[in-house]
Length: 462
Image 1 (tube, rainbow, N blue to C red):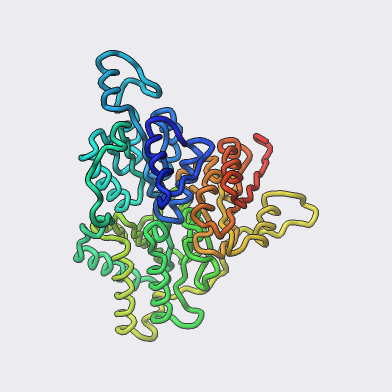
Image 2: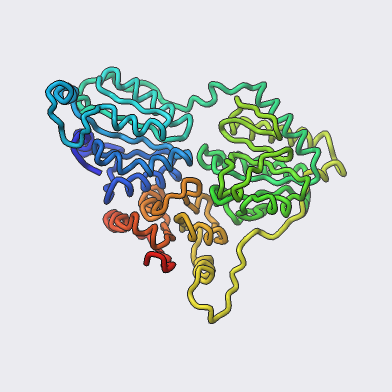
């Protein structure tokens, strides 16, 4: 959203006819934040810029959601020049959009970013920017860059080489081996096990590795209908196509649901999973029979292995399963098999004369959406009802299922379409949530997007 203090950045981009950066205008800062979030979920990284203070503060809710759900964004903010800061401090003249305290904006964003830098010197600024971007790549969370207006076109050192994630630099091979050994001991001791495919498979680009592990397990440790299957949860819905033959459904992993899946003594193997309220029915499911591996470490029962990356854990777990297959053949493999069960879904077979309801709406949508659609769903009733939708396309479902800010979906649809221009964004939003970001419909139109927005009027606001 254009404004002073960041205008030189925009002018520089627009003046470069070969710039790889495409500017997409948004109706307001909140819409811009949600659009950037939706874009980054599908493309890996998003960037946005705002006007100092008056624009930045409008964006706080969106950045907090991206921080909570591990979506990597670069927030670029302008600031008064160094001279103007001195005038404010010593002469008492208050400039536009300023509170009089030069640290106000950065202090607001520090708690919801993995790195926050205020750049007032162009030569030193290049190192600050590289440091922040490395943190974003490593932790998959937003970073904040505040740049004083007199620095934008000041000479600086040109970039050299590439920036990359620093996650693998701290991985301890011995810790990974210990975590996998503990996991295999638990898995082999149980009669039934099931994989829980988590959102980090998408965030860290590990879906292919997960599918390879799944294929290895089922080819070497099971045969026919006896196989180890997987589920997803609201936060990770569609990280794998729901057409997959081993998909058990998008579920809420309550204690009752876990009993249905694997019984009282079965093992849940979470890969890239977080224990968030909507995913686990507000219950803490970590226990003696669970394996929960994420990018910040691996829990096997009560044992925690902190210096283990998710990617290294999945790779080594696959090797361990292959070794087990060579070692143990026949009856010993029963421990990893579970019977195939129907996908978990809400029954949608209303009477013909029941009229238009949530059930009939989602039943109709289920017959209409396909592999070329990406469904973007808002918090509340739409998110609950949408769990029954069959999403054929991998990453074909986008929702803010942990932070749960209403209004996310309409604006996120802008970024989703920018990220996947060959697909159609289908937004499902409640009427109260629609009031939050209805301006984003003008963004869809202004950018020539064929997005469809369904507003579900439940009688509370509409």
